[in-house]
Image (cartoon, rainbow, N blue to C red; front, side, top):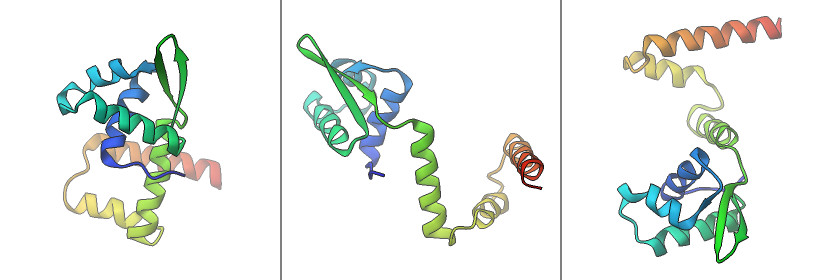
Length: 123
């Protein structure tokens, strides 16, 4: 799977939220970044070359859509981080957050449910 820079990820997040989108729409949605239109178009071109985006020509403009779902990208990145930093183990990652009190009650309930579901389906 492709490597996406942080800036490119900002562009992808805009497109994941609402697509297809023209470059002008994407630039407008990224207004808080204060990037020049040419910069955004460069990111779009790179993302197309990487296979993260597709496009269709409509009149004189291009409409961009994601070629990879946000969920698939998040899963790939999560696996990569866990593999590189935690030798493929999830528990040290969760334990680190728990020790720093970075887990909310909702997070804890979600994790409990995930574990219960896993146990039910894997016994």
